[in-house]
Image 1 (cartoon, rainbow, N blue to C red):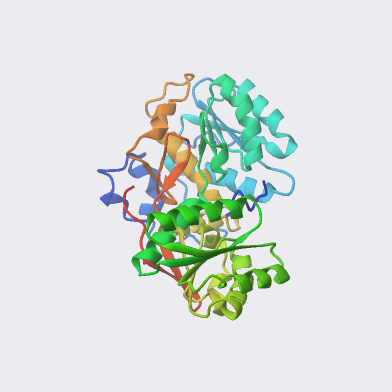
Image 2 (cartoon, rainbow, N blue to C red):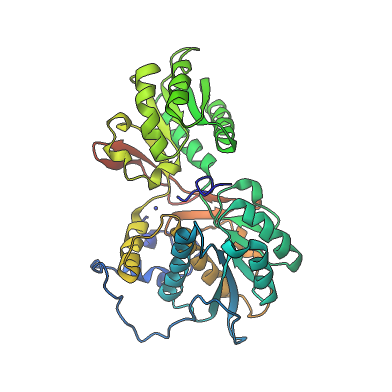
Length: 397
């Protein structure tokens, strides 16, 4: 599974949600709710008198007074950038929540995920946060399950969820369902799709067929392509062979959407609404594409994330990877659970599937019993140089 397939690749007024959502309390978002100014790039965060929690480390914790949490991410090799961004996010969350009872130890999966997982279990960690890639999740689970240690993975591959493995990643099928529902509510009933060859495209096709049927619509055509111009052109010419359509799902990342949209307009339909997935959320180039204007996609809200990104830049001198919000939220969730978790005892897995859900940088979410996260998503429209929220994320699931 590639990094893209695991999605290397938002916020509402929290005071309105406290009666429904179970979370860490006001301190969990103290830096978000209390921000009145933006910290300048490169500036150090303000110092406080609060004791600094144990940082993310790279060795065996030397005491028995903290909950031991393992962070498994790539800290070297080709994915070191996103791995370090995730690690930085967890450190920020520990500081922001003042979680002095948690000690996180990092393990570099790029040097061998099996060895990293074995070290994490041997060192006495009771929860594993990570890994990043789905194949690494499988390898880690084979070691963690016999030890009774649950996993909060950053993957978005629902196929690896379940049996003490919980998936924090944003599931593509949920964004497809959300945008199809919105399109149907706006009167669109005939759908088509352009999907890449491979597992992602297959799952996108299955999701579209199922959801369109559920809402009473019709899928007139699904065409696959190989991510090259010739293949895209050929696929778009076939899209309208079975009749006209009002909406077309372009199930790929933002860069591929920009590449394919002109072919859709030229060869298939000049007026059909282009629909996308949450993979578009990380593409800054979409807003500048003329062919993409009017296109719709569903994703988590960016409201709280933007505040987090400003603080991240101030601390680390660079922008975070979008995926790093999962690292931050994994700590918020752990801090909430740690309130009633005896140090040294097994992690209370049953608290992860609390139907009341949680709230993090990416909005409202909860885990289903199969280990897959369910998220509240908003629908955005691409306009001339900007994105506009046309249907806000629900405040509850």
